[in-house]
Image (cartoon, rainbow over all chains, first blue to last red; front, side):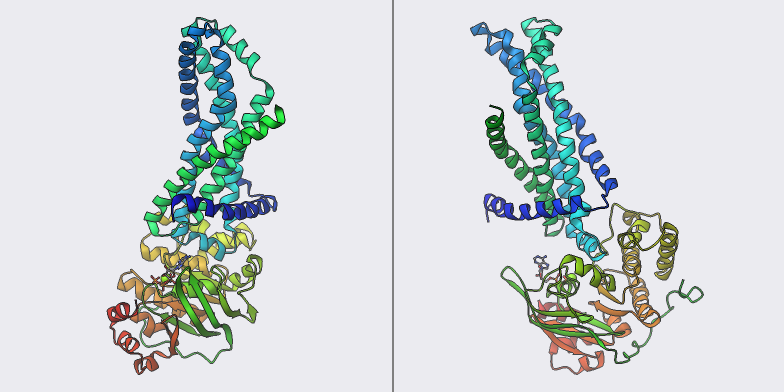
Amino acid sequence: MSGVQTFFGAIGEVAILTGQTARELVRRPFEVKLWIVQLEQGGVQSWSITFLTAVFTGMVMASQFAIGLEPFGASLYTGKLVSLGIVRELGPVLTALLVGGRVGAGFTAEIGSMAVTEQIDAIRALGANPVRKLVVPRVVAMVIALPLLTVLADLVGCLGGVFITMLEVHISFRFGIEQMIDTVDVPDLIHGILKSAFFGYFIAIISCWVGMNTRGGTEGVGQATTRTVVWTSITILISDFFLTRFFLAIYG
Amino acid sequence: MSHPATPVVPETVDGAATPPADGEEIIRFAHVGKAFGDKVVYEDLNLDIRRGETLTIIGGSGVGKSVCLKMLIGLLKADRGSIRAFGDEVTTMDERALMGVRSRIAMLFQGAALFDSMSVEDNIKYPLREHAWGTEEQMDARVAEVLELVDLPGVQKLRPSELSGGMKKRVGLARTIAMKPEVVLYDEPTTGLDPITVRRINGLILRLQERLGVTSVVVTHDMDTVFTVTNRLALVYQRRIAFVGTPEEARHSDIRFLREFIKGGRGVLQEDLS
Ligand SMILES: Nc1ncnc2c1ncn2[C@@H]1O[C@H](COP(=O)(O)OP(=O)(O)OP(=O)(O)O)[C@@H](O)[C@H]1O
Ligand SMILES: [Mg+2]
């Protein structure tokens, strides 16, 4: 089977896993300790990669627009374009792609190793539920962490943009910030943050599903990890289109 | 603590296990079929297991010995046929009902399947916590007790990565028996271990059966296990159980591979069956 076929074949099973996750999520007692471990590993430890990605994205966009807009005498609009681009698209999407690669691959490798060494069978044999123990904490962590990381990316990306605009277009820092605040509406921000919550869910559920279905020893774990990176990236990019159309239809 | 004063493992394990006292039948596979995609593992699996006995399952690599054990506790679903445990049909149970079966029938996995992310102590407490077994102090005591039983006192704080293969198997066994199961399924408990550790583990299987009345199902490639712990021997061959009988009966079976396995021709068995 080709990769694309397997990908679409898996959608049904991922949906089933989502149902099980939802059921276990609301079942008491909540295993908050496990959730916090994942928040720490998936979320807190991803801030530096988010920071770097965002600051350079903001700076490179500002460089491009400052030069590209000059022939039209529109360089002063650089800040507007950069902040809109970051807050609406690049903040959520690039953060999801980068964090998805890092965290998703980690989830799959960890759960995949457990699958091939029968640790997942052992969880069930010892009277526990692997979805509850492994999937729920990771989904919770990513749905919470990714929007927060996106806020960080938005902020840092815009500041990076302002910094380059100051150098290139010779605006003041104050003008740059005011222009940014002027341009970005609350719906723009919310739109991006909501999208990132969906991306967080996709990253966690796909990487967990691939991990739990890993076969074939250590080699299988390697292949599964690669598969997760590809599948989460594709899912983020495709779903971004539909989510964007959906939110645009709502907010206009 | 059940037997504090006695040595945990007999120094040597000689002679065959005592014959079963004709226990009642507690587990029965009837006409079970199982396939993964195109690969048929079982066509017509029939087998019964009696209370108090040690049943040993042998067969070539990849014939489905592990699959047989996993179907019994519902880790894998049979495609057709019936599997009854303590009178209840396992094949139609949901995950919740299976928890009941799994607290009575515990499994020691092929690679021990210890949780890498946890200490030995937390591994053994895992089933206890899931079943709200008792207070933290009671659990500490139980952990110490089962570790003593497998002859590994004091390793509570170690991580699985710090243990040797044989120690992992024994910690896995400690975790398996922590909930006091009535039946223990051993999936290749001695494969890949040195002869001394093999004897020690065979001694443990025997001891659990004789002193705690545990019913044992042992998957093995090991002749020592066959002759020290087995009451009845079952051979997985051609997608079913092709032979069930005492090791002595197996010597005179008309299945050539079985006779050769019993004579010590382990390699022959592996080649011819796979
Ligand atoms: N979850 C699974 N998905 C797909 N195929 C499986 C699965 N579990 C087992 N199989 C296949 O079923 C067959 C029997 O496997 P099983 O693990 O029971 O063999 P075994 O007799 O225990 O062998 P070994 O001595 O190597 O442990 C093998 O061909 C294996 O590849
Ligand atoms: Mg096996």
